[in-house]
Length: 485
Ligand code: NAD
Image (cartoon, rainbow, N blue to C red; front, side, top):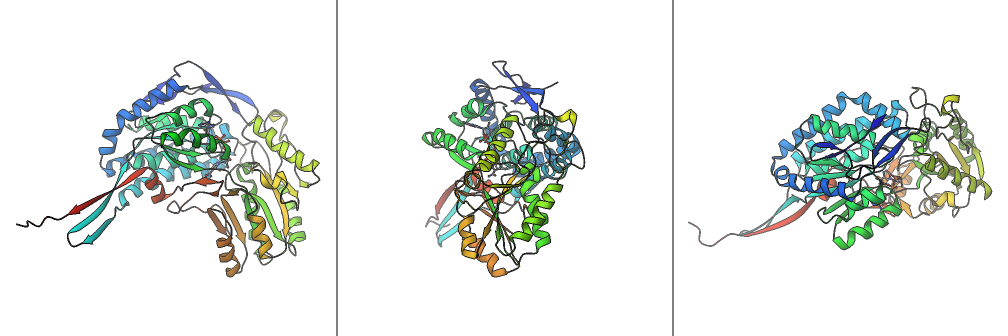
């Protein structure tokens, strides 16, 4: 049975109070390991180590810090299969998806920010012939990094890589539901000889270890990805301490499917955007709005394809979806569907738990579900389900489509399906979401701003945006003297 340890000051250590949590395997619902139930005492040690490591780390040449990041990327790549299996076992996604998406994207995070820090530019302003202003960007110290369970390594490394590249040291608190790849990452950091204390990982519960990190006076910035309600709690804790915060939060992402779309590619991508990773990607589409004239045909073809998606053992190469992350999450998703059904919305397919095979009866599998509704205020249209459930709703015209897309508190992402350039550009402007995809989904460019509008987040991640967040900018104003030689 696997036992995970904290990684503090370059050493693998047991939690100070000796408490451990069970780590469940969604595939069959069994406990397959334990992780530290860390307390404020563990966070205290990790922050002290990171604080002590900061002066030397920030003084390294950028190229030297970049070299460490490249080495980390190479070391993960050598163990790609190990990471992919661990991620699947912890989170439930098929191994092939972890191998093709999550782990390569985590590797890319390190490579990208190793390059980005070498190309970062500072600004200079010539105020007059004798006056020069120039800016310096300086790392802030110990970065507190808190990440969720759905893309555990990818989202964690999207914080660690820019934080370290910019010259900060870090204390990271991965999700208690998916600690395995973060533990493997700690082993990689150790192997590549990252100076001790530069990156520390403390495992445990959000309300305990996470809260201690947020409340620690020696942690001037918190980068958080997770639920919208959690961010409100963290914000209340961090604000009186004047911490810099970045919040990447939940979504209720619409797809606007116009009658003139390329139907085949719309169907293919929308099936994926709705159900990839069991619908447990913050960017997954969860509300489909289809123009009335296309609705009957779209519904028939979409539901037919969703029924064919294979929910199965995540270890099997032909499973499209694995189990949900936990028993609690399965109950939550099922509850949403049952209440929706009770309110009279029509479940077109799915809507129930499934067991792919006898040996996996206790796994957390749920069938991909499509619900037809026209009630914009229904719970299923307003609340983030974060599972394999999408709603299907007609719209009349452009104005109706945009109004429906915007009718939630969230504004993370949206997809627009049309062949009309005008419609695409207008909708991109009119929809309140931080990420708009036109005739595609999940294409990634690490230089572009990523983050939500409305209750989906505050702040942006991505190339310069991350390097900006993990540093403070200062201006130096220089007056040339009159006494020239
Ligand atoms: P969550 O908010 O429950 O937990 C996220 C992290 O915060 C975990 O590490 C948890 O331990 C920690 N935490 C919980 N309470 C805390 C507290 N009081 N103080 C400090 N830390 C605390 O979210 P989750 O269930 O792990 O993740 C799912 C959510 O994340 C969904 O809403 C999803 O949309 C969102 N998400 C957003 C993005 C994005 O980029 N916008 C990406 C992935 C997931």
